Length: 390
Image 1 (tube, helix red, strand yellow):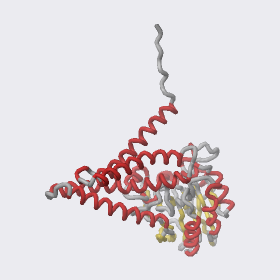
Image 2: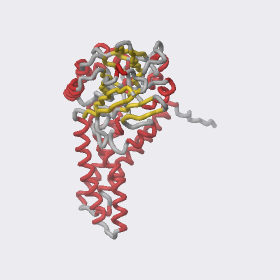
Image 3: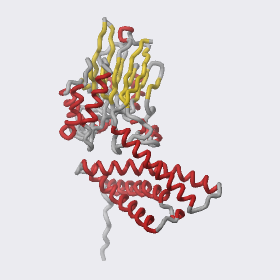
Image 4: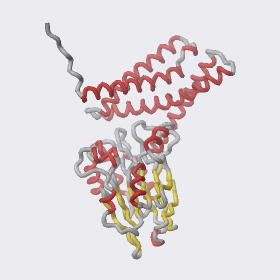
């Protein structure tokens, strides 16, 4: 008599099983919670409404993970990406507000409102608010960003540079939706500001240069004496070095762990840039944030403006005595209340903040969007900073 043993699953197989389990669980919650708000049995909807509505939720919840895998798996399907990300944005809005309207359900219950009236009132509020926010979010995501103006006082800035203007672009995320016209409009808005310096602090696109060349082309028309660019984490999903090279070809200076010095009448101002922190694990040789290399050769008295995609890099900037760090990455949360999760990873959501005695951090909400083509209570922006000598 012989016995057989089953070999334990390989690490890659275990990861796939874990990923599938997590994806299915999250998907089930995202769709089930809105269902309880719109089609709860207590509402006593006519049976055709209940059947058709429930069937819609079931079919969409099954199709969603399939589309998501096709969008981000080996196929990298733009068509699947457009549908999956739109569904994700809509279901996130309805999920979030379904949770909120469950509070309304409790209030109505305490007030003595019985079903089916109670459940139908909750469903109506959820439907109206959800559709209104989805419509608002779609419009906000596709519009040319508003300009957000901020004065930034830097104690070590020489008066020669007082009034220097910096236009900050971040997170353009050229992707599956062709936004060439939007890109041209955004560049026109930047040029209308007539800035001294324009910077792009990463996440230029979701895809390779070949895939997004047309959408990125208007960046070559940005008018400024100095144009600086650093990589974001999304570049490391699609060959960051190719994007650095492409931006150089468009006339930008790619600050790949290096710096440039601006001079006015003997005064100096350093613009330094570092790769996104994810570059070290991307497999691209020579990539990864190296602030020491970026600042090598600068003088101790030089005021420094650092381009670093993620605000979390400000800890290193403070230690190095950087005067101003410019970042993006957060999107300001993009779709409320996702900002609560962003704040678990990043020290700042948006705007100007102070860190330590010297360092200021400006975090842009970004010009574009990632994934769902929605922005809810987190408007896009072109940031115009005016430096002031304190």
